[in-house]
Length: 481
Ligand code: UD1
Ligand code: CA
Image (cartoon, rainbow, N blue to C red; front, side):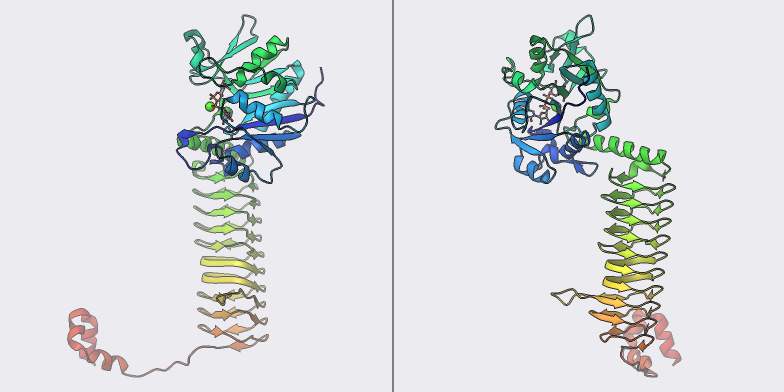
């Protein structure tokens, strides 16, 4: 039977409270790998090409819905958390189409489930002509999970919850992950679920018996890697999920030709791309839409967000980049900060304690130490001396500065924006530049030096006794005068 043309709808259960997180934040919004857990389920659904995705919300519903706004999903509020069966039905009733699709059920707190695994499960569901497929796994001790009960022929007959299980059933290693693919009858059958006699909750697992009663075939699809359905219930579970995801991502990069010195210390979001022969030193964190080209070195404890690093760039230790573009062969840091709108050409040198923001630095610009370059364009090969400040803010507005190519800015100069400095101009050290400078000119804007001979002898000589107590070298020097 070829069902592959049936559409897929997805219901994500995310209304539960998650008290064990001990948090003001709803459980499913706790981040793993830089995304709220529930966003992983949404992403997986969308990667499978789901036609509609409904997220069932309850505890913290406004926050969960706000976090997922703009993702194209719809929400169904579960009025009271009366169990997974009730949650599913709330979601299924919010699906815009009915009767023609397979329905995939996911949880909002299993961020490690791979879309590839779900794709295999869907293919198996379709290939077998199954009406109801349960994603299962095996654990030496499956305490806490619903157990999969099979008959002598190996067919799945029931799912028993921990609370209702006999000792023999508790010994069963195969467990229910809570992920299912169902045919289009599921919502109608779910309406027949009655409250569990022990807990009073509506169990979605009761669908299995209802499918059987309807004469339909149910199957289990067994996971090979049970980490995929590890739900994070508390902060230790969250850290474990993070570690598993981190290893998964970093191993993928290593297989593709990236060197890590101590990969357990590196958090790299799955949105980041790394070229070949990239070197990742300990403690580096890479986030968002960061793209790293071949041969880049990422120095220890650097944090890089939404940035593009071209071939051969060297980021040195403890640098922080956000929304920056760094041209080929440039080097940045240690202790540099490139803020949004920083665009560096090729072979640019940014040294320690240099901050850039909304700054376009052309090829070969050098700012070796201690500078603030904000709202500025700088031409090729310009040298920015230590302590240079672009004073871009007047207390209310930001102003733009343009510095030409081949300019030499002497140390500890302030350029008071808005300012234009022509090509090949020269600014003397310590200048406060408040007028524009034409091409090729020298500007000196600092107090003229006065040198007063013998001044120190008079000054210290007026307090000889104290100098004698505190500054013995100077006291001897005074004696010699
Ligand atoms: C459920 C399964 C169990 C399975 C386990 C896997 C049932 C009856 N049992 O158990 O067989 O082994 O998952 O983790 O389904 N939720 C709602 N609304 C509710 C209740 C739950 O949205 O009223 C959501 C939760 O937020 C969670 C998911 O459904 O994402 C599962 O709920 P949970 O209470 O963890 O189910 P279990 O009792 O662990
Ligand atoms: Ca659970």
